[in-house]
Image 1 (cartoon, chains in turn cyan, brown):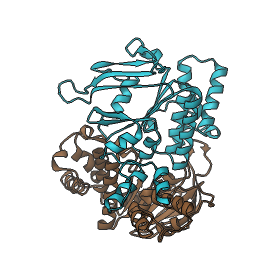
Image 2 (image 1 turned 180 degrees about the vertical axis):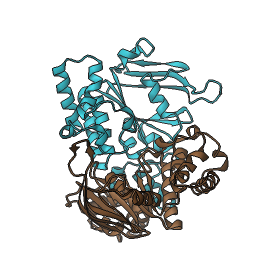
Image 3 (image 1 turned 90 degrees about the vertical axis):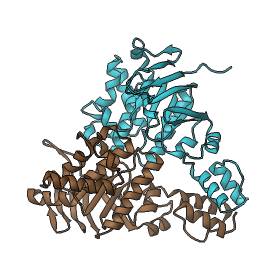
Length: 271
Length: 285
């Protein structure tokens, strides 16, 4: 039996300026299962961030519905639903509030009245996960860009939401910490069934997702597993191995016709 | 313009509280017209290094020499002004600094602050806009009506309008889509080549390092642990080194194939084009 979807988006439409016809998002529908990792890709201005803002109720759709864990997101329900959905923005400067790293991580927990002892434990655990426990007493404004991004992620992890939205939350991290956090999130997903929706321009990260949503000018043009998406969307920057396959092909080499993952291509080249 | 660091130590001070040293006894020489990529972990001191170059952060010990101007602990106002005029700094997410009613006014703000008249500043703004590839009709628009990639161009044009001789950029491609990022990086490379701007680029993307930079500078815990030509650097980089630097994708892929076949490809490949021809030459396809 298919598990009940944690997120169901139906016919979502949004305009920033109601005087204009031009829609930022038009009739977007998809759903996400518990524990799924979905990557959202598309050019700047394709509506990805608007979609993420709608999903946490920061802006209201013109029409269409969002159901989180079976409950429709609306003016009444959004306060309680936000305990289940966490969002990490691209620029962490936009969400700092505390005077120390640990205060900042605790802010969300204070808002939902978590008992002090539990709050302390959760803050510690979250800072440990993002490898920032040592800097817990620092002023966030003195941190580097990547460290700020990690604190922002810790703030969300401490809330233990069922659904995490990442709006390019890894862009300022060095490759090593990026991989580290990626595997932290993968583990949480496997152990606790957290669903992750990650807006990203990183083709290699997208290639590792369960499914990819492709956005173009406010429309969802494809949602499918990475191999099908990269095979069909030629405009999309493909993962490195796939690009190499295409390059070899255009040099007249006799490579397979279909999308290949890195391991498949290495295997094929070494045979 | 040459940049020289002479035993520089720096930290951030907040009231009476000092942080630990962010930059630790650093010696460095960046020749004029060089294009250097600065890499290293988050918190290694990359952004602080950039801030030292235009006097946003003052050395606690040692001094920084930009061209013929010296920045010391005291931070002489006149020399700071000199330096800031010569060193254009593009921060992380520079579009966050846009504020004016129109693109043109926003770009002209810098030159006006450096003492140009409004007409002169507008002229510089128009030239800078052209340099970064903004259309004339964009100039009268609000910067906030533009896409992220366009906004970043406006922010960079605002820096270029003061005709800097040194350009320091802190992750200029972050958050842009692949196409937008390629355009911005190509623009920076082009400026470096045409206007001979000494360029310093902080990035986490080793493909950017391989594609655009000439030299690479590795920072760790506030010190420079390596400073070499890009190709030499990646050729010698092995996994045994203790600073964990990622390889450009082409090189990483190459090593994977070489490990599996037990054969070396004819050259060290830093780009996908090099790898494509090396694979063909080695008759692996």
